[in-house]
Image (tube, rainbow, N blue to C red):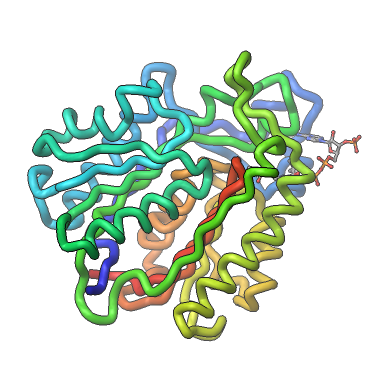
Length: 313
Ligand code: UT7
């Protein structure tokens, strides 16, 4: 059975925060942020707009794009580190708001690799034959857990959501291979503080890890699919830092024009980052039916996940 993306949608909040904003209260500059991260601006959700609201907006688009109705969804998985509450889950909240049947729902926590983990989890349920249309969402409101007094993290993060309906797709489409992993010993380098509830990061350690793992995980996924770098039409890395993305691209041997870059507009949106980037490429007509994509994420805990897939249904 070919399992892939039957419908797709993404959502970014309208409030744009440029780099100059941080200059007013932090010892930083647009020049430093642009040069060291590639970020020019990011979107922040409004105070009354939470993760479930962004997830809902992306989900409505994905369901419409799949040409199905909410009642055709038979499971909901949301990858997020910033759910509105620990429970009810964002997936729970979507079940009610979308008006699906009373289907199974779960949030999954693999930080910035979350969308990769959820897609692969959904794939197993579809392949079992028990489920047919699984709504997979990556949504994060990082602005609510960002420490605005810490210049090394405050400038990096943004908010957004992306959604995909995962199900059976036709020959020549769908997920070809994947590689998932984690290394708990690195949890201390990137975590949410239990007292302040803010993100704490050792940027240098995460940077070193990311440079190694992005290249390794995507190379393994490409090999497992029996492909080479020449077969890749679009490389979509987690949008954390342009320097990390560049080094992964070079390791894989993929030309610059085949790497999706949206970090300049959205910053690091964790579980939403890969789908937001895909949405941008779709909008620009840079992803076509049958194209071979490599998606790769890494994040807190530390986790990683890479997927190769043939785009389309
Ligand atoms: O989704 C995964 C989440 N995280 C990431 O992917 C982040 C991975 N790490 C990074 O992207 C990079 O480590 C950073 C962009 C956060 C920092 O870049 P770096 O090359 O690792 O720099 P550094 O942390 O070693 O800092 C270099 C200098 C330091 O000053 P001193 O000690 O040399 O005087 C920092 O204090 O840059 C300083 N610095 C800043 N300066 C201006 C750190 N943040 C800022 C800032 N503005 N915003």
